[in-house]
Amino acid sequence: MAAAEDWVVRTAGQVRAEGERRYPGETPTCASGISPSGRVHLGNLRELMVPHLVADEVRREGAPCRHILSWDDYDRFRRVPVGMPEEFAEHIGRPLTAVPDPCGAHENWAEHFKEPLREALDRLGVQVTEISQTEMYTGGAYTAQIVTAMRRRVDIDAVLGRYRTKRAADQEDDDEPQAAAAVYYPFRPYCAACGRDDTTVTAFDDETTEITYTCACGVHEGPTPIARVAGKLVWKVDWPMRWAYEHVTFEPAGVDHSTPGSSFTVGAELVSEIFDGEAPLHFAYSFVGTTGSAKMSSSRGGAPTPADALEIFEAPLVRWLYARRRPEQSITLAFDAEVGRVYDEWDALSRKVAVGTADQAAQTIFERASGPAEGPLPVTPRPLPFRTLASVADITAGDQAQILRIIRELTAEDPVEDLDEVRPRLDCAQAWITEYAAPEDRTEVRDHPDTERLAALTDEERGALKLLIDGMTADWSLDGLTTLLYGVPKLLRGLKISEPPTPELKAAQRDWFILLYQLLIGKNTGPRLPTLLLALGQDRVRFLLGG
Ligand SMILES: [Zn+2]
Ligand SMILES: [Zn+2]
Image (cartoon, rainbow, N blue to C red; front, side, top):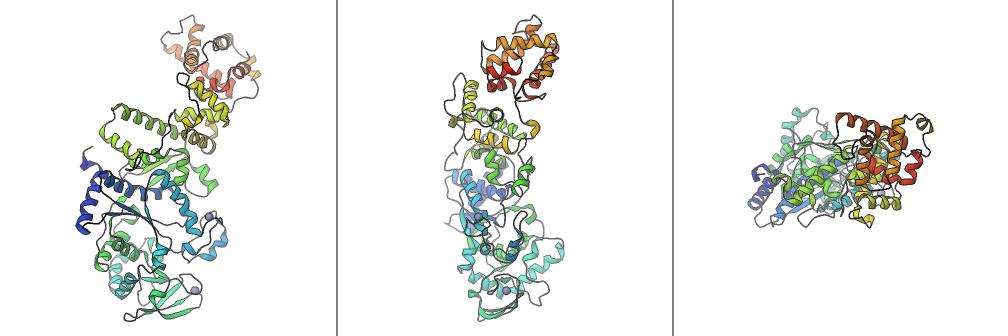
């Protein structure tokens, strides 16, 4: 793909050029912002992957690039997420870092939700510089900017006012100070007594920088120097302040933040007018949806997370699912039976890249998916088809010794010696079968022969079963069984086993396979029959087929 058509290369070039123009000699900065208010889901991962791909491209080109992850952990706790105890409602209005940890193992609420994302990013090879807004605000990093914003409150109010009428239905504004207040202040204190932000600023002295506020809990505070008052700028002012503070050159956002009158548009005006900065390069990225995750989502409380995806997809596949779409394209991550197809596509691409037949665009995306600039991520040494591994894991109910036996038989020409050779893919397949596979796609091997069906066999069916049982021992391998299974209807008709199939033979093969599925697993379809037979072993096959 020509560089101009490749959004990653194009944006990386812009980041380098703009970074050099704005902040000569400095490492350019790409930014992501995440609120650890609840489970960080797969949609939020795009907020990280888009800047990551760009920063990573700059590094691939041999230049440094900083990717910051700004944790919005000083935001107010807005609501108790579904599935969490209602008693947390007591903390609504406090900073996320002041809310207790729901599990007891973390420092606070925010850390509880940061940790799984941090681990997922590490596995995905996404290197970020974390910035805690709690640390920045409480450490006084932004005091000068807060004082500036307070002194310029009338100007800020005028900019915001130009957009207020245009966005009646905008949902982002619940963190702005009370619209009813006579005077607008862009800073919202966290109450010194109750810790909540149910506060109203009543005065600010531009000279002394002393602030006075009241709180719904009854407290009247101040005048106190604003440097000693906990609190934060409202979101629409906070965002542009940070662009200027961190010298952000590129920051994308979800389409909901990028419409006219939204926080990006407003921020772009405020950053130059108030904070003497420039809006970052910016574009909107589209949504990320999932299919087939309903069962797991309801049991874990909410949409699937990057950690959930990494349970069933190898890390390079997760990178690939994001990297292969342009930002304006939406992404659908499948957790249903489509997972097998996604793996097949990835394996086909891997093979093409290995032999040099992939087209340039696909190869570039493959390289981005395989790992960051620092080097490729670990892969499964023997990438057997995902569907095969899922069938084996299913049929054996996860029994490791049995899995190894079957996989050795499946790879008879160059046998797998140790299950680590098929990991992590085997673990992904195991997790998928257990957590996501639909009941109708699962395989339950019969405990006892289907005596009723066996008693009703036609002569032809009985003959076919005898050919299989007598013939299978001669070449008990994937290839041998495949040939025999397809060959039985031919042999029955007095044809050679190598006879090319006719429509009539194909119909006979279909009926024959259905018979086997019924006798072995009580359904009309199932995993590939040669794999299934190998998994069951000769004795079990003979027992269930009435031999
Ligand atoms: Zn916790
Ligand atoms: Zn209070």
